[in-house]
Length: 76
Image 1: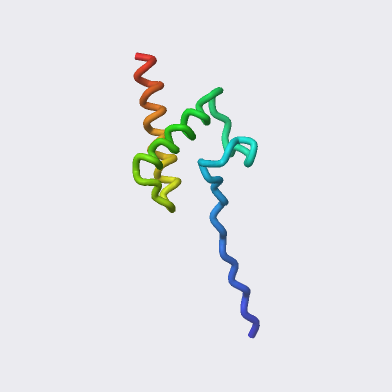
Image 2: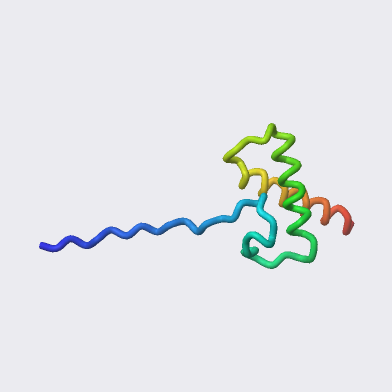
């Protein structure tokens, strides 16, 4: 009786938000300047939170929320 080899799906590699745009390809297109705004805010959050390692995605997603809120408030 032959056994089928188990295959596992790997999660897609998510680039670190602290890398510059030149060091990796951006996974999605954002309006001009927004990627840089989010990266700057993520870095600020990282510093404010004591430069915690292993929380880069949390910092990035929180930065996205803050930048989007700033843009939304500016349009009102």
